[in-house]
Image 1 (cartoon, rainbow, N blue to C red):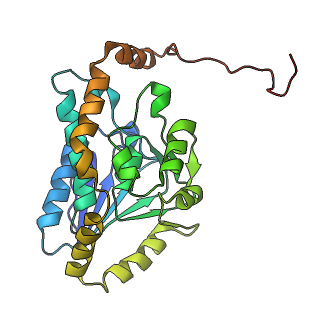
Image 2 (image 1 turned 60 degrees about the horizontal axis):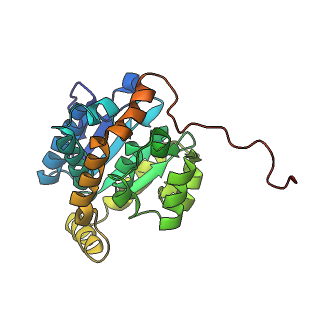
Length: 267
C-alpha cells in the first residue's frame, strides 16, 4: 500500500487505486494544489496497465465543498488558467479509460457535485447531500453544468440550480446524479460493484466508455465556451463586488425578504 501526505491520499492495492480527498479541516475544498494532485494522479492511473479500477471518496463530513473562491479569483491574469485546470481535471475523470466509482456519504457542494458527476458510477449512503448554491453567491455553475447534463435531465438540472435546495442521496438517485443509493455500509455496496467490474474485460469497459461518449453530448465540446463564460464573469467588477460581500461576511445587495402576505390574500 502506498500513502501520500497532503490533501489527496493515494492507496494502491494490487490493481485497485483509492483516491481520498483528505483535507477535512478545509471541507475538502478544491484549491489549486488538490486539483493539480488529482489531475496528475488520474493521468498516471490511466496510463498504468496494472490499474483496473479507481475509487474516489473523501474523509470528513464534507465530501467536497467545491472550488475555493479566493483561488478561483486570485488574480485576473490566472483566472482562466485556474478554471481550465479544474475543467481539465473533470475531463480526466470523465474520459479515464479505467472505471471510476465515487463513494459519497457526506455533503457535496457546488464544484464537488461536478466532480461526482464526472465519475462512471456514483454510490451514495444515507449521509449524502448534494447542493448547487452558486446563484446565492451571484455565480453561474458554468464549469460543472456540462458534466451534470450528461446525467441529469435539463428540467431537473435547472431545478437544482434555481432552487439551491439540498437534496438527499435517495433523491439524487431519482434525479440521475446517483446510480445506487443504499442504507448499507458503502464499502459493502462498493464490493458488490467491484465484483461485477472485475468480471468484465478492461478493454471492453474502456471501449464501451469511448463509444458511449461518442454518440451523445461530450463536455469537451463546450470546454472553451464554459471557461470563457466563467472568465468573463469574474472579469466583471460588479460580479466580484458580490463575492466581496460574502468574503467580508456581509449580505450581498440581492438578499431580500419575500413578501409576507400570501398570494391568495385580497388587496
